[in-house]
Length: 512
Image (cartoon, rainbow, N blue to C red; front, side, top):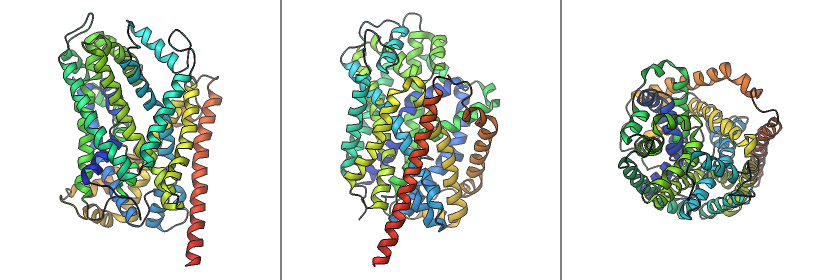
Protein backbone atom coordinates (compact mmCIF):
# COMPACT_ATOMS: atom_id res chain seq x y z
CA UNK A 1 0.00 0.00 0.00
CA UNK A 2 1.36 3.42 -1.00
CA UNK A 3 1.92 6.11 1.61
CA UNK A 4 -0.39 9.09 2.02
CA UNK A 5 -0.45 12.51 3.62
CA UNK A 6 -1.56 12.69 7.25
CA UNK A 7 -3.58 15.91 6.79
CA UNK A 8 -4.66 18.38 4.12
CA UNK A 9 -2.76 21.28 5.71
CA UNK A 10 0.37 19.13 5.85
CA UNK A 11 -0.01 18.30 2.17
CA UNK A 12 -0.39 21.98 1.17
CA UNK A 13 2.56 23.01 3.35
CA UNK A 14 4.69 20.28 1.73
CA UNK A 15 3.65 21.44 -1.74
CA UNK A 16 4.40 25.05 -0.80
CA UNK A 17 7.71 23.97 0.73
CA UNK A 18 8.62 22.30 -2.55
CA UNK A 19 8.03 25.57 -4.37
CA UNK A 20 9.40 28.02 -1.78
CA UNK A 21 13.16 27.81 -1.97
CA UNK A 22 16.34 29.81 -2.33
CA UNK A 23 15.07 31.40 -5.54
CA UNK A 24 12.32 33.25 -3.65
CA UNK A 25 14.68 35.19 -1.41
CA UNK A 26 17.87 35.43 -3.50
CA UNK A 27 17.11 34.98 -7.20
CA UNK A 28 13.82 36.84 -7.54
CA UNK A 29 14.83 40.29 -6.21
CA UNK A 30 17.96 40.29 -8.37
CA UNK A 31 16.02 39.32 -11.51
CA UNK A 32 13.36 41.95 -10.80
CA UNK A 33 15.91 44.72 -10.25
CA UNK A 34 17.87 43.80 -13.39
CA UNK A 35 14.84 43.56 -15.70
CA UNK A 36 12.73 46.64 -15.15
CA UNK A 37 11.77 46.55 -11.46
CA UNK A 38 8.01 47.02 -11.24
CA UNK A 39 7.72 46.60 -15.00
CA UNK A 40 9.24 43.12 -14.65
CA UNK A 41 6.06 42.13 -12.84
CA UNK A 42 4.11 42.43 -16.11
CA UNK A 43 5.92 39.56 -17.91
CA UNK A 44 6.27 37.81 -14.56
CA UNK A 45 2.52 37.66 -13.91
CA UNK A 46 1.75 36.94 -17.57
CA UNK A 47 4.01 33.90 -17.30
CA UNK A 48 2.50 33.03 -13.91
CA UNK A 49 -1.02 32.97 -15.39
CA UNK A 50 -0.18 31.33 -18.72
CA UNK A 51 2.57 28.93 -17.63
CA UNK A 52 2.85 28.67 -13.84
CA UNK A 53 -0.73 28.03 -12.74
CA UNK A 54 -1.62 25.78 -15.73
CA UNK A 55 1.49 23.64 -15.20
CA UNK A 56 0.79 23.49 -11.48
CA UNK A 57 -2.69 22.07 -12.20
CA UNK A 58 -1.30 19.76 -14.87
CA UNK A 59 1.21 18.27 -12.43
CA UNK A 60 -1.39 17.90 -9.67
CA UNK A 61 -3.78 16.15 -12.07
CA UNK A 62 -1.21 13.81 -13.64
CA UNK A 63 0.26 13.00 -10.24
CA UNK A 64 -3.02 12.05 -8.59
CA UNK A 65 -4.10 10.03 -11.64
CA UNK A 66 -0.81 8.15 -11.62
CA UNK A 67 -0.92 7.59 -7.87
CA UNK A 68 -4.32 5.94 -8.17
CA UNK A 69 -2.64 3.39 -10.47
CA UNK A 70 0.36 2.92 -8.17
CA UNK A 71 2.76 5.11 -10.15
CA UNK A 72 4.11 8.34 -8.68
CA UNK A 73 6.82 9.05 -11.26
CA UNK A 74 6.74 9.74 -14.96
CA UNK A 75 8.29 6.65 -16.65
CA UNK A 76 5.29 4.38 -16.02
CA UNK A 77 2.81 7.22 -15.54
CA UNK A 78 3.35 8.51 -19.10
CA UNK A 79 3.40 4.97 -20.47
CA UNK A 80 0.02 4.40 -18.84
CA UNK A 81 -1.36 7.38 -20.77
CA UNK A 82 0.07 6.60 -24.22
CA UNK A 83 0.50 2.82 -23.85
CA UNK A 84 3.75 2.75 -25.84
CA UNK A 85 6.84 1.06 -24.30
CA UNK A 86 9.29 3.73 -25.55
CA UNK A 87 7.45 6.44 -23.61
CA UNK A 88 8.93 5.09 -20.38
CA UNK A 89 12.32 6.33 -21.50
CA UNK A 90 10.96 9.82 -22.14
CA UNK A 91 9.59 9.67 -18.61
CA UNK A 92 13.10 8.95 -17.29
CA UNK A 93 13.77 12.67 -17.75
CA UNK A 94 11.19 13.32 -15.03
CA UNK A 95 13.39 11.39 -12.57
CA UNK A 96 16.86 12.32 -13.86
CA UNK A 97 16.27 16.11 -13.91
CA UNK A 98 15.21 16.50 -10.24
CA UNK A 99 17.95 14.08 -9.13
CA UNK A 100 20.66 16.13 -10.87
CA UNK A 101 19.04 19.29 -9.53
CA UNK A 102 19.15 17.93 -5.96
CA UNK A 103 22.89 17.27 -6.20
CA UNK A 104 23.86 20.90 -6.85
CA UNK A 105 21.00 22.44 -4.87
CA UNK A 106 22.02 20.60 -1.72
CA UNK A 107 25.47 22.19 -2.03
CA UNK A 108 23.95 25.68 -1.80
CA UNK A 109 21.63 24.50 0.97
CA UNK A 110 24.68 23.43 2.98
CA UNK A 111 26.25 26.88 2.54
CA UNK A 112 23.15 28.39 4.18
CA UNK A 113 23.51 26.04 7.16
CA UNK A 114 27.20 26.89 7.41
CA UNK A 115 26.57 30.63 7.31
CA UNK A 116 23.86 30.33 9.97
CA UNK A 117 26.47 28.69 12.20
CA UNK A 118 29.13 31.27 11.31
CA UNK A 119 26.74 34.13 12.07
CA UNK A 120 25.52 32.68 15.36
CA UNK A 121 29.11 32.03 16.48
CA UNK A 122 30.29 35.54 15.56
CA UNK A 123 32.78 34.43 12.89
CA UNK A 124 31.99 37.54 10.81
CA UNK A 125 32.86 39.89 13.65
CA UNK A 126 35.35 42.54 12.60
CA UNK A 127 34.74 42.24 8.84
CA UNK A 128 34.18 45.77 7.63
CA UNK A 129 34.03 45.70 3.84
CA UNK A 130 32.70 43.69 0.92
CA UNK A 131 36.13 42.46 -0.16
CA UNK A 132 36.56 40.75 3.25
CA UNK A 133 33.29 38.87 2.77
CA UNK A 134 34.26 37.95 -0.80
CA UNK A 135 37.54 36.49 0.48
CA UNK A 136 35.69 34.63 3.25
CA UNK A 137 33.32 32.97 0.75
CA UNK A 138 36.18 32.07 -1.61
CA UNK A 139 38.15 30.48 1.21
CA UNK A 140 35.11 28.57 2.49
CA UNK A 141 34.41 27.23 -1.01
CA UNK A 142 38.03 26.13 -1.43
CA UNK A 143 38.77 28.62 -4.20
CA UNK A 144 41.51 30.22 -2.10
CA UNK A 145 43.34 29.77 1.20
CA UNK A 146 43.73 32.49 3.81
CA UNK A 147 43.21 33.49 7.39
CA UNK A 148 39.70 32.06 7.76
CA UNK A 149 39.98 28.58 6.20
CA UNK A 150 43.10 26.57 5.41
CA UNK A 151 41.28 23.63 3.81
CA UNK A 152 38.01 22.62 2.20
CA UNK A 153 37.04 20.39 5.13
CA UNK A 154 34.45 22.85 6.61
CA UNK A 155 32.67 22.99 3.23
CA UNK A 156 32.65 19.20 2.97
CA UNK A 157 31.59 18.85 6.61
CA UNK A 158 28.54 21.09 6.28
CA UNK A 159 27.57 19.34 3.03
CA UNK A 160 27.66 15.97 4.80
CA UNK A 161 25.60 17.32 7.72
CA UNK A 162 23.00 18.64 5.24
CA UNK A 163 22.97 15.27 3.49
CA UNK A 164 22.41 13.46 6.80
CA UNK A 165 19.53 15.81 7.72
CA UNK A 166 17.84 15.06 4.38
CA UNK A 167 18.39 11.32 4.79
CA UNK A 168 16.96 11.34 8.32
CA UNK A 169 13.78 13.19 7.28
CA UNK A 170 13.22 11.22 4.07
CA UNK A 171 13.79 7.83 5.70
CA UNK A 172 10.86 8.51 8.04
CA UNK A 173 8.40 8.63 5.16
CA UNK A 174 5.81 11.00 3.70
CA UNK A 175 3.63 11.58 6.77
CA UNK A 176 6.08 10.97 9.62
CA UNK A 177 9.04 12.60 7.90
CA UNK A 178 8.34 15.20 5.23
CA UNK A 179 4.94 16.30 6.55
CA UNK A 180 6.07 16.56 10.18
CA UNK A 181 9.07 18.70 9.17
CA UNK A 182 7.15 21.10 6.92
CA UNK A 183 4.51 21.66 9.59
CA UNK A 184 7.29 23.17 11.71
CA UNK A 185 9.62 24.55 9.02
CA UNK A 186 7.12 26.50 6.92
CA UNK A 187 5.52 28.58 9.74
CA UNK A 188 9.00 29.16 11.21
CA UNK A 189 10.29 30.26 7.82
CA UNK A 190 7.47 32.78 7.39
CA UNK A 191 7.90 34.05 10.97
CA UNK A 192 11.62 34.71 10.48
CA UNK A 193 10.95 36.35 7.10
CA UNK A 194 8.34 38.68 8.59
CA UNK A 195 10.66 39.64 11.48
CA UNK A 196 13.47 40.36 9.01
CA UNK A 197 11.11 42.40 6.83
CA UNK A 198 10.04 44.54 9.81
CA UNK A 199 13.68 45.03 10.83
CA UNK A 200 14.69 46.07 7.28
CA UNK A 201 11.75 48.45 6.83
CA UNK A 202 12.66 50.27 10.06
CA UNK A 203 16.37 50.70 9.27
CA UNK A 204 17.74 54.24 8.84
CA UNK A 205 20.28 54.91 6.10
CA UNK A 206 23.82 53.92 7.11
CA UNK A 207 26.93 55.84 5.97
CA UNK A 208 26.92 56.11 2.17
CA UNK A 209 23.61 54.24 2.00
CA UNK A 210 20.16 55.51 1.15
CA UNK A 211 16.71 55.10 2.66
CA UNK A 212 14.64 51.92 2.63
CA UNK A 213 12.21 53.76 0.35
CA UNK A 214 15.01 54.16 -2.18
CA UNK A 215 15.67 50.43 -1.90
CA UNK A 216 12.05 49.53 -2.49
CA UNK A 217 11.95 51.95 -5.41
CA UNK A 218 15.02 50.27 -6.91
CA UNK A 219 13.24 46.91 -6.82
CA UNK A 220 9.75 48.05 -7.78
CA UNK A 221 9.98 51.36 -9.68
CA UNK A 222 8.91 50.41 -13.21
CA UNK A 223 11.22 50.81 -16.18
CA UNK A 224 8.83 50.14 -19.03
CA UNK A 225 11.58 50.36 -21.66
CA UNK A 226 12.66 46.88 -20.50
CA UNK A 227 9.36 45.38 -21.70
CA UNK A 228 10.63 45.55 -25.27
CA UNK A 229 13.64 43.46 -24.32
CA UNK A 230 13.09 39.78 -25.04
CA UNK A 231 15.50 38.84 -22.27
CA UNK A 232 13.14 40.27 -19.64
CA UNK A 233 10.39 37.91 -20.79
CA UNK A 234 12.73 34.91 -20.88
CA UNK A 235 14.00 35.76 -17.39
CA UNK A 236 10.42 36.09 -16.12
CA UNK A 237 9.47 32.69 -17.53
CA UNK A 238 12.61 31.13 -16.08
CA UNK A 239 11.87 32.59 -12.66
CA UNK A 240 8.32 31.19 -12.70
CA UNK A 241 9.64 27.70 -13.49
CA UNK A 242 12.35 27.96 -10.85
CA UNK A 243 10.14 29.36 -8.11
CA UNK A 244 7.12 27.07 -8.58
CA UNK A 245 9.23 23.94 -9.17
CA UNK A 246 7.13 23.09 -12.21
CA UNK A 247 8.72 21.04 -14.98
CA UNK A 248 10.58 19.04 -12.33
CA UNK A 249 7.81 16.49 -11.56
CA UNK A 250 8.15 17.10 -7.80
CA UNK A 251 4.59 18.43 -7.53
CA UNK A 252 3.45 15.43 -9.55
CA UNK A 253 5.09 12.98 -7.15
CA UNK A 254 3.69 14.71 -4.06
CA UNK A 255 0.24 14.73 -5.71
CA UNK A 256 0.47 10.97 -6.29
CA UNK A 257 -0.06 10.53 -2.53
CA UNK A 258 -3.33 12.51 -2.66
CA UNK A 259 -6.70 10.79 -2.33
CA UNK A 260 -9.21 10.80 -5.22
CA UNK A 261 -11.68 12.72 -3.06
CA UNK A 262 -9.22 15.53 -2.26
CA UNK A 263 -9.58 18.89 -4.00
CA UNK A 264 -6.54 19.43 -6.21
CA UNK A 265 -7.88 22.50 -8.04
CA UNK A 266 -8.01 24.67 -4.92
CA UNK A 267 -4.92 23.04 -3.39
CA UNK A 268 -2.88 23.73 -6.53
CA UNK A 269 -3.98 27.36 -6.52
CA UNK A 270 -3.23 27.68 -2.79
CA UNK A 271 0.27 26.28 -3.34
CA UNK A 272 0.98 28.76 -6.11
CA UNK A 273 -0.37 31.75 -4.17
CA UNK A 274 1.56 30.83 -1.01
CA UNK A 275 4.73 30.74 -3.04
CA UNK A 276 3.98 34.08 -4.68
CA UNK A 277 3.38 35.71 -1.30
CA UNK A 278 6.75 34.48 -0.08
CA UNK A 279 8.49 35.60 -3.26
CA UNK A 280 6.91 38.93 -4.17
CA UNK A 281 6.00 40.32 -0.73
CA UNK A 282 8.86 38.93 1.36
CA UNK A 283 11.61 38.04 -1.11
CA UNK A 284 11.34 41.34 -2.93
CA UNK A 285 11.46 43.44 0.23
CA UNK A 286 14.36 42.11 2.30
CA UNK A 287 17.75 41.59 0.63
CA UNK A 288 17.93 44.43 -1.89
CA UNK A 289 16.30 47.17 0.27
CA UNK A 290 18.67 46.17 3.10
CA UNK A 291 21.65 46.43 0.74
CA UNK A 292 20.55 49.88 -0.44
CA UNK A 293 20.42 51.11 3.17
CA UNK A 294 24.14 50.30 3.52
CA UNK A 295 25.59 50.55 -0.01
CA UNK A 296 23.19 52.89 -1.84
CA UNK A 297 21.43 52.12 -5.12
CA UNK A 298 24.59 52.24 -7.25
CA UNK A 299 26.52 49.98 -4.89
CA UNK A 300 23.64 47.50 -4.65
CA UNK A 301 23.27 47.41 -8.44
CA UNK A 302 26.95 46.52 -8.73
CA UNK A 303 26.57 43.74 -6.14
CA UNK A 304 23.37 42.39 -7.72
CA UNK A 305 24.98 42.32 -11.17
CA UNK A 306 27.42 39.76 -9.76
CA UNK A 307 24.54 37.38 -9.06
CA UNK A 308 22.26 36.22 -6.28
CA UNK A 309 25.11 34.49 -4.44
CA UNK A 310 27.03 37.75 -4.16
CA UNK A 311 23.99 39.40 -2.63
CA UNK A 312 23.11 36.54 -0.28
CA UNK A 313 26.52 35.31 0.87
CA UNK A 314 28.71 38.39 0.59
CA UNK A 315 26.61 41.54 1.04
CA UNK A 316 23.95 40.26 3.45
CA UNK A 317 26.31 38.95 6.17
CA UNK A 318 28.06 42.34 6.22
CA UNK A 319 24.76 44.22 6.29
CA UNK A 320 23.27 42.08 9.02
CA UNK A 321 26.41 42.34 11.13
CA UNK A 322 25.99 46.13 11.29
CA UNK A 323 22.30 46.00 12.17
CA UNK A 324 21.19 46.42 15.77
CA UNK A 325 20.85 42.81 17.01
CA UNK A 326 22.59 41.86 13.77
CA UNK A 327 23.85 38.52 15.00
CA UNK A 328 20.30 37.39 15.78
CA UNK A 329 18.81 38.66 12.52
CA UNK A 330 21.73 37.29 10.55
CA UNK A 331 21.12 33.86 12.03
CA UNK A 332 17.43 34.22 11.14
CA UNK A 333 18.36 35.07 7.54
CA UNK A 334 20.52 32.02 6.94
CA UNK A 335 18.26 29.65 8.87
CA UNK A 336 15.39 30.92 6.74
CA UNK A 337 17.39 30.12 3.59
CA UNK A 338 18.38 26.71 4.96
CA UNK A 339 14.77 25.77 5.75
CA UNK A 340 13.66 26.98 2.31
CA UNK A 341 16.38 24.85 0.75
CA UNK A 342 15.58 21.82 2.93
CA UNK A 343 11.86 21.76 2.08
CA UNK A 344 12.77 21.95 -1.62
CA UNK A 345 15.53 19.33 -1.57
CA UNK A 346 13.20 16.91 0.25
CA UNK A 347 10.72 17.29 -2.61
CA UNK A 348 13.25 16.83 -5.41
CA UNK A 349 14.77 13.82 -3.61
CA UNK A 350 11.36 12.20 -3.20
CA UNK A 351 11.03 11.79 -6.98
CA UNK A 352 13.73 9.13 -7.31
CA UNK A 353 12.75 7.57 -3.97
CA UNK A 354 9.15 7.15 -5.16
CA UNK A 355 10.42 5.61 -8.41
CA UNK A 356 12.54 3.04 -6.54
CA UNK A 357 9.66 2.20 -4.20
CA UNK A 358 6.86 2.04 -6.76
CA UNK A 359 8.59 0.37 -9.69
CA UNK A 360 11.33 -1.76 -8.08
CA UNK A 361 9.51 -2.56 -4.84
CA UNK A 362 12.31 -1.28 -2.61
CA UNK A 363 11.77 -0.67 1.09
CA UNK A 364 11.74 3.06 1.74
CA UNK A 365 14.95 3.16 3.76
CA UNK A 366 16.86 1.24 1.11
CA UNK A 367 15.46 3.56 -1.59
CA UNK A 368 16.50 6.62 0.44
CA UNK A 369 19.96 5.16 0.97
CA UNK A 370 20.50 4.46 -2.73
CA UNK A 371 19.14 7.83 -3.85
CA UNK A 372 21.14 9.85 -1.34
CA UNK A 373 24.33 7.87 -1.99
CA UNK A 374 24.11 8.92 -5.65
CA UNK A 375 23.17 12.51 -4.87
CA UNK A 376 25.75 12.76 -2.11
CA UNK A 377 28.57 11.50 -4.35
CA UNK A 378 27.69 13.91 -7.15
CA UNK A 379 27.16 16.80 -4.72
CA UNK A 380 30.50 16.14 -3.04
CA UNK A 381 32.26 16.21 -6.41
CA UNK A 382 30.49 19.47 -7.29
CA UNK A 383 31.68 20.94 -3.97
CA UNK A 384 35.26 20.01 -4.83
CA UNK A 385 35.09 21.54 -8.33
CA UNK A 386 33.31 24.83 -7.59
CA UNK A 387 36.22 26.81 -9.03
CA UNK A 388 35.66 25.14 -12.42
CA UNK A 389 32.03 26.26 -12.77
CA UNK A 390 30.59 22.75 -12.44
CA UNK A 391 27.75 23.90 -10.17
CA UNK A 392 26.64 26.41 -12.82
CA UNK A 393 26.70 23.66 -15.45
CA UNK A 394 24.35 21.48 -13.38
CA UNK A 395 22.18 24.52 -12.64
CA UNK A 396 21.84 25.40 -16.31
CA UNK A 397 20.98 21.97 -17.68
CA UNK A 398 18.86 20.61 -14.81
CA UNK A 399 17.58 23.88 -13.31
CA UNK A 400 16.79 25.82 -16.49
CA UNK A 401 16.77 23.94 -19.81
CA UNK A 402 15.59 20.72 -18.22
CA UNK A 403 12.62 22.41 -16.55
CA UNK A 404 11.35 24.06 -19.73
CA UNK A 405 11.87 20.93 -21.83
CA UNK A 406 10.11 18.58 -19.43
CA UNK A 407 7.30 21.06 -18.79
CA UNK A 408 6.63 20.94 -22.54
CA UNK A 409 6.42 17.14 -22.38
CA UNK A 410 3.98 17.34 -19.45
CA UNK A 411 1.78 19.92 -21.18
CA UNK A 412 1.59 17.93 -24.43
CA UNK A 413 0.79 14.66 -22.65
CA UNK A 414 -1.92 16.28 -20.54
CA UNK A 415 -3.67 18.34 -23.21
CA UNK A 416 -3.13 16.33 -26.40
CA UNK A 417 -2.41 12.69 -25.51
CA UNK A 418 -4.47 12.17 -22.38
CA UNK A 419 -6.79 14.80 -23.89
CA UNK A 420 -8.24 17.95 -22.34
CA UNK A 421 -11.70 16.44 -21.64
CA UNK A 422 -10.14 13.70 -19.48
CA UNK A 423 -7.58 16.06 -17.99
CA UNK A 424 -10.21 18.68 -17.15
CA UNK A 425 -12.39 16.02 -15.53
CA UNK A 426 -9.44 14.78 -13.46
CA UNK A 427 -8.66 18.32 -12.29
CA UNK A 428 -12.25 18.79 -11.05
CA UNK A 429 -12.60 15.40 -9.35
CA UNK A 430 -13.47 16.23 -5.73
CA UNK A 431 -12.95 19.95 -6.38
CA UNK A 432 -14.55 22.63 -4.20
CA UNK A 433 -14.02 25.27 -6.89
CA UNK A 434 -14.72 25.46 -10.60
CA UNK A 435 -11.64 26.49 -12.56
CA UNK A 436 -12.56 29.27 -15.05
CA UNK A 437 -13.23 27.77 -18.47
CA UNK A 438 -10.63 30.05 -20.06
CA UNK A 439 -7.92 27.87 -18.52
CA UNK A 440 -9.22 24.89 -20.52
CA UNK A 441 -8.01 26.67 -23.67
CA UNK A 442 -4.91 28.13 -22.04
CA UNK A 443 -3.78 24.66 -20.96
CA UNK A 444 -4.59 23.17 -24.36
CA UNK A 445 -3.17 25.84 -26.66
CA UNK A 446 -1.38 28.76 -24.99
CA UNK A 447 0.86 26.91 -22.50
CA UNK A 448 2.26 24.37 -25.04
CA UNK A 449 2.78 27.07 -27.70
CA UNK A 450 4.64 29.33 -25.26
CA UNK A 451 6.85 26.43 -24.19
CA UNK A 452 7.61 25.50 -27.80
CA UNK A 453 8.43 29.15 -28.56
CA UNK A 454 10.78 29.42 -25.58
CA UNK A 455 12.51 26.16 -26.53
CA UNK A 456 12.96 27.11 -30.19
CA UNK A 457 14.12 30.60 -29.22
CA UNK A 458 16.86 29.14 -27.05
CA UNK A 459 17.89 26.56 -29.69
CA UNK A 460 18.22 29.21 -32.39
CA UNK A 461 19.75 31.99 -30.31
CA UNK A 462 21.92 30.37 -27.65
CA UNK A 463 22.23 26.60 -28.06
CA UNK A 464 25.28 26.40 -30.39
CA UNK A 465 27.43 28.66 -28.21
CA UNK A 466 26.35 26.92 -24.99
CA UNK A 467 26.89 23.41 -26.33
CA UNK A 468 30.36 24.28 -27.64
CA UNK A 469 31.23 26.09 -24.37
CA UNK A 470 32.20 29.31 -26.09
CA UNK A 471 33.76 31.82 -23.70
CA UNK A 472 34.59 29.20 -21.07
CA UNK A 473 38.02 29.05 -19.47
CA UNK A 474 39.96 26.31 -21.34
CA UNK A 475 41.18 24.93 -18.01
CA UNK A 476 37.57 24.37 -16.88
CA UNK A 477 36.30 22.64 -20.03
CA UNK A 478 37.40 19.08 -19.08
CA UNK A 479 35.53 19.31 -15.77
CA UNK A 480 32.47 20.73 -17.51
CA UNK A 481 32.44 17.81 -19.95
CA UNK A 482 32.69 15.44 -17.00
CA UNK A 483 29.66 17.22 -15.47
CA UNK A 484 27.70 16.66 -18.68
CA UNK A 485 28.86 13.05 -18.75
CA UNK A 486 27.60 12.54 -15.18
CA UNK A 487 24.18 13.93 -16.11
CA UNK A 488 23.99 11.65 -19.17
CA UNK A 489 25.21 8.72 -17.07
CA UNK A 490 22.50 9.44 -14.48
CA UNK A 491 19.86 9.28 -17.23
CA UNK A 492 21.27 5.99 -18.59
CA UNK A 493 21.40 4.43 -15.09
CA UNK A 494 17.76 5.35 -14.47
CA UNK A 495 16.80 4.06 -17.93
CA UNK A 496 18.46 0.75 -17.00
CA UNK A 497 16.38 0.65 -13.79
CA UNK A 498 13.24 1.32 -15.84
CA UNK A 499 14.10 -1.65 -18.04
CA UNK A 500 14.69 -3.76 -14.92
CA UNK A 501 11.31 -2.67 -13.56
CA UNK A 502 9.66 -3.74 -16.84
CA UNK A 503 11.26 -7.19 -16.53
CA UNK A 504 10.07 -7.52 -12.92
CA UNK A 505 6.53 -6.65 -14.00
CA UNK A 506 6.63 -9.30 -16.75
CA UNK A 507 7.93 -11.94 -14.35
CA UNK A 508 5.25 -11.04 -11.82
CA UNK A 509 2.56 -11.24 -14.50
CA UNK A 510 3.85 -14.64 -15.68
CA UNK A 511 3.75 -16.05 -12.15
CA UNK A 512 0.15 -14.98 -11.51
